[in-house]
Amino acid sequence: MKLTGASNGAGAAADAKVTGIVAGMAVGAYSIDDLAVLRHGAMPAVFAGIRAPSTLGTFLRSFTHGHALQLHAVHRRFLAELAAHTPLLPGAGEKAFIDVDSTHKRVYSRTEQGAEYGRFKGIRTLHPLLATICTPHSRPVIAAVRMRRGKAADSRGAPRFVSEALATAREAGCTGTRVLRADSQFYNAGVIAACRRADVRFSITTGINPSVKRAVLGIPDEAWRHIEYPTALPDPVTGELVSDAEVAEIPRLHRVREPCEGGAGHRPADRPSSPRPG
Image (cartoon, helix red, strand yellow):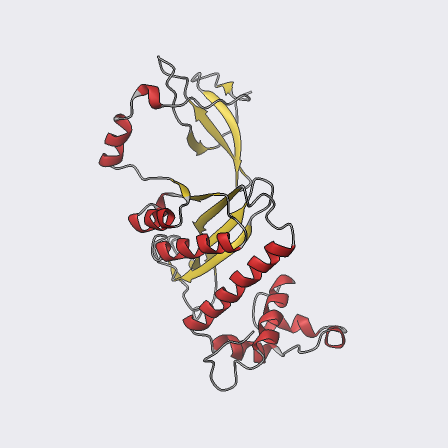
């Protein structure tokens, strides 16, 4: 591995420094000083090239956006090779899902680069975009990460990020049906165009606005499909069918409407959970 463009010798032995930082993070290091965990016990006798935390800190502080993109390229190649030599994504040749979302990570330092007060009042956060790949038979693996400022909208830079994630999926052996899944924050022309260029199907939530309402109301009854929920039970108060679900380990309830006359059905509305009566 070679990172070009670092100054004052900070980029020397980048392979040892990058792997050292990743190893430190894997064992729980949160700060530069925490990377001293790599020098505990007999670690230096087992692994060559362990650097001091101060050296690793100088290395990280020398990074520019270009260096981050170089690491992204290394990650993409590594993921492709790993998928080619291990059963990382079984069934990727038939079907794969690429999920794109954003997240917030609370930080406490006022000097943390990119951290700002964003969506959460009084809380300083980082705001990365994440893309994962999975198949019906595998757990998700990280395909791409892109850091933005804490106040950045989810859609900022999303088309290019989605293009990169879709390319990574193909390089990792996802050559069958590929489906991009995202929430309404990623519903824009650039993201849709990126999916079409890559010949990828997509399932993206849309926000409610007058044009969307008109489009939904214009769908004929016979075009709706009824969704079966075998375990759904009627709510004793409202009579609506209620089906348990779990999203990100958070219990939720799906309210399911009965089919309309003529056999038409309604999509479920996802609502926060509440204790089921009885």
